[in-house]
Image (cartoon, rainbow, N blue to C red):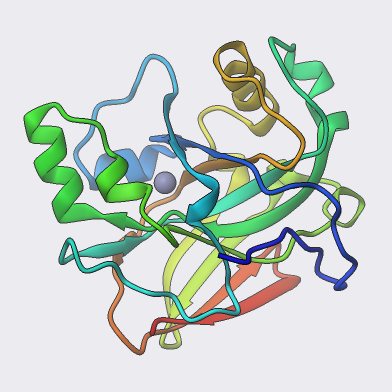
Length: 220
Ligand code: ZN
């Protein structure tokens, strides 16, 4: 894997590529569509750095499952070490925002859930986190009021706003930092809104952040 973090203006990013910490069930409408319970605490899981892949590469669907769902999420690039911090300091440690797809083998996840087993096979495989270049924080001054939109083959599949998060970005990252130290170059995925569905070979994806930043991708 030769993934490197980069910014939308092709400005290089000197942050190393770290882990990806993700939250499940952070948007009510998505919790309802999968029939899940509203969690008392954030549902956290991780993807290794080998899950990250640039959106410019064709998305490769894994072969150890049948239904690989897209989950469009706001991704946050961590710029400073965060350990046991308060929410108030989080904003100053953010190095950028991107759109990521939390690829999820839904059929595999359903089997793992039924057996009470961890989710890595469904969510942490190689290439499980296609991600756009990062928008610098100054270019997205209100990250908690940003529209997220995913079109697949020209049709809107997912449409949400970061204002619909049950736990906002700063609170979520502060919570994560109580358990997992976040290092410069780590990425946090903030959960998906509703509309998750399976991707198929040849699908063309258009991702849009805040109605201003557009990225395209294709399924191999
Ligand atoms: Zn997700």
